[in-house]
Image (cartoon, rainbow over all chains, first blue to last red; front, side, top):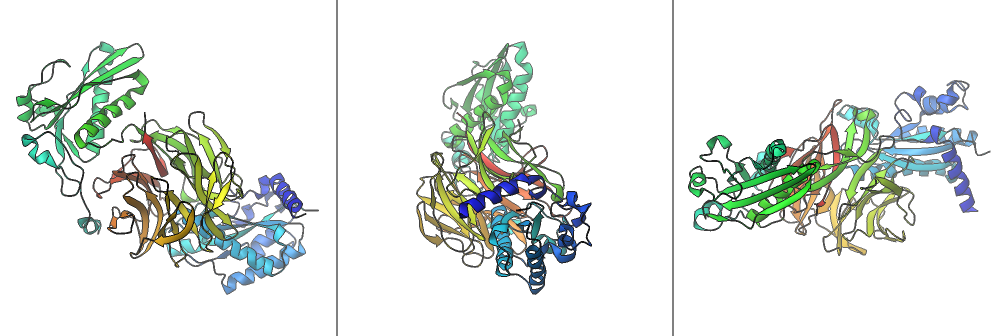
Length: 171
Length: 438
């Protein structure tokens, strides 16, 4: 049974790869309007609380971390509580949580750190009632910065975990 | 600052070179201070008209190889008293002694159709004797660079007593675009940056390629699926497939075992990253670490019995050594700052690493017990060392800061001397130095 769920999930995620595959710039870019929901945004604007655009822009799709840490801040927990409510209300959506790091670390370690951050988000969402089979984690380490300056203000925006909503429906 | 760091470093010495007149020519690469060994390499004889340009190019390539080591200094041809007129002509030793050329390299090049033949001889000028016999390499005209590198390897080997590293290739990540739009492709090149060839397109993010021990395959991490996964690529056919691992969903940081039949790598399970070993054939995997911390960047000892890796189990990234079968690990890094990406030297005596301390990144080496740490470089961001096949030189990535920051490859010898950029066209990162080619 567990295996079946996994297979079904995988197939669905793959089936909508064009929308859910996080490995492209813009998928979690600073400009949420150009995010992965391009196809949906025409009929589901930011004012529609069931739209992924609303999730990205009004609730907030990302939480930030301090250097080398995967501890959620109070502010981050508030955002994640909103994410959890949205995911529970809009039960047809899946989410991939992407962990990221700033450039001040080695490549391999930053991939591990990104997983740690993504998993902290996943565990918090699960603790608030989001089913585990709707959440997957990945990490891009330091490979996908949203800010490119080499100052702390940019680094802090790059140390993030982004919840990328998939338009795929389980129903 | 770098100077200060280097003052504690071991340097390379011309062992008996300074006393070359009292014994056979021998440059011993050990501790001490160095004066590069002066040599002369008159343009190789073109024995056919078609060979004229190749003879010039090949001679210059040999000179660049040798001088590029920092161990040798070329005496310019303008200082020559005589020129060898034929390959077999007796050497006029006094003419070369007069300009203090300790080594003399002569050669001849023949081109016939697409066939290229290169001959060379090496002379110990002050002993007045030839070093080793003449050697001849044959191949195609397009392969002239490899033949030049083979001449350089033979000269280096005869004078230092160690194998060279010139006829070798490096697999790396070719980079284009700004930091927030960066495209990465696998590419392979000669050690000197020539003959670059792309192995993947820029459709998927790829990281950290690693050559197999004999250079026939490359392991790397691909984000093609949106999740890091390990791929294996056959260099000759450029055919690739995803590596089969027991739980092989999310894996990265792979390296081959010394026999090329196994891979050691990191596997992420939720937020925890541990080290695994897997058979390339069957995919059967063994978990080697089980701490809740991040364990990654494993590298095997040359005898295959131990693994050096990094872990943040102490609270910061540090280096550890464990048995190749896992189990208890002992920490070897204890200096200030954090340590990552350890790589075991092919000579087995040293571990190269990336160190981050006080806002700077360094490439360094330490003994396998953690003693005698030496930092070889310092910059905004240096990382990812790889060893030359003979364990004398380290290549690494250097990224510059800011909006227009780019990545480039550099090499440095293990004394910290002779830091220089590798002439790769375009941005480059994550080098992995392959073996000396047969």
